[in-house]
Amino acid sequence: MIGIQHANNLISFYKHNAVLLKKVGNFVKAGEPIAIIGSSGELSTGPHLHFELWQNGVPVDPQNFIVFQD
Image (cartoon, rainbow, N blue to C red; front, side, top):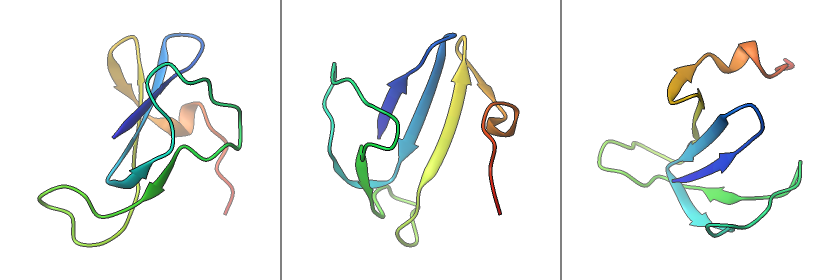
């Protein structure tokens, strides 16, 4: 798992990675790779990305912060 601290007390989490490309303290620019998806974890059934967004220590709906395109 890798987490990224953003402005406004937001943290994005990316889980089930095969390889992490960043380390604690690294700065990340928009569009920069941070990990390679994988199938880690006991209940994983194949390569995928588990994404979470938290604000002030509480999980929030990413659709309220990110514009997703079809």
